[in-house]
Length: 339
Ligand code: KG4
Ligand code: ZN
Image: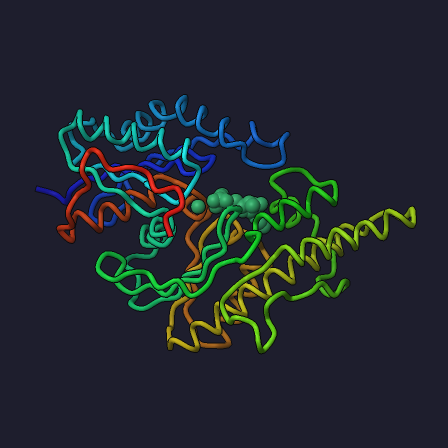
């Protein structure tokens, strides 16, 4: 008999994801995003997201099974995100996952969304070294974690953002700059023609008295908005390329500086960067440069595994099944504000 086959379901925000993993290997994964439906509101609308999950759930699961060449009967366990996330969105995924587990008569595992992001990298680069530092940067999170054994040891939260997430900062500044949503990729493109040192944007929470691993991006967002406004008031065009490159430089500087400080303090030789913002060209380049200088191995999974997806949830489920962990009961509930 081969390794157990685990189906993972993700629905915490605007992506409906289904992934199939067996013995640490990714067999298939499919993601449907409702991003376009939120674009004209400039951010994710919970009600729209929940409805989109309801529509996408069946086709996405079916497509993942088809691509893996499997039927529901060949699934040995179902793993699902229980939190944190938007409650309506989480409810849809959990209800669907329960129905699948019940129909296939297999155990159900509840998975913490951030554990999923951490595990995503194992599908590309194999098991994570113990310990490693993980930087999760997306539109919803900016967290620095110390990870040991993902199944047996609790994840140590070194720090989080105290206000906006890094991706949120990109999205909001892009809006002020008149760039489309999602703003991160638009800022990245605009920055190509700019100078990252043209505007001296602040580096929040990097002073000697500040919490070493906490992040804050709302002050940076305001500074970038004021800078754009000053040009507008003077009737000048906004030097978008320089503004975008300088914003990106500030975000990349703060993220990588803190991540490498954590590697140094905890004597960790591996840094994993995941989340949509890991796609940012300057974040990647500066992480590579600073990791190489510090002798730290940098692991960044491919973008499709970096952003929200079902494969990363299946990856955690797969680790839990193989570790003999206790499954959840069918009356397990969502935990939208899971720590
Ligand atoms: O992980 P993700 O798809 O969803 C969650 O937020 O959980 O991340 C989306 C975020 C958005 O804020 C988007 O603007 C940002 O990642 N992003 C980027 C880039 N690509 C996506 N930010 C900066 N540069 C990019 N190239
Ligand atoms: Zn996420």
